[in-house]
Length: 188
Image 1: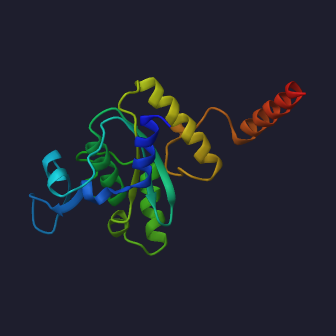
Image 2: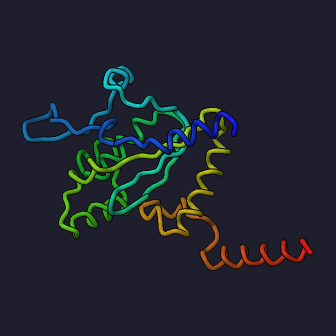
Image 3: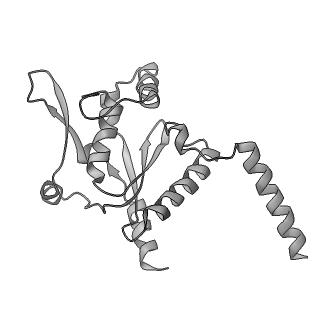
């Protein structure tokens, strides 16, 4: 196994809490108002948190909704996670992160189960796949591959349609069957 695989496996074995990197605090704009802030690189070191690579793929996981979102980043990972925290909790929406229909649906899904999105955000873990030595094209292709595999398993429900593969599930199954049949014929 080469070095990059061992780094990837090590990161996947050790997910991190979203709330450790993008945390809720009292807003400077008034009492009883909340804000979401990010940890500085020095604070990450001081707190003994996992130092994160800049480039790669990340998967958001919640105990009820499983692996619900897969994203990619080429820089500033902590800021990307802050934006997810804002959208998940609804704290500070519009000021730094714009809401999406799917994140609004996630908050509604929490509420329909009698759960508070702010409390549930604290349970979200992130699996990170470091890809510092890879080009944007390679990272994008890996993201598409994982999205395709995840959708087959009912995962990544809150990814937007632009992240979904070009083929329908029926088309992918047909292509897989065709490839399997052809490879069996060629093996004879």
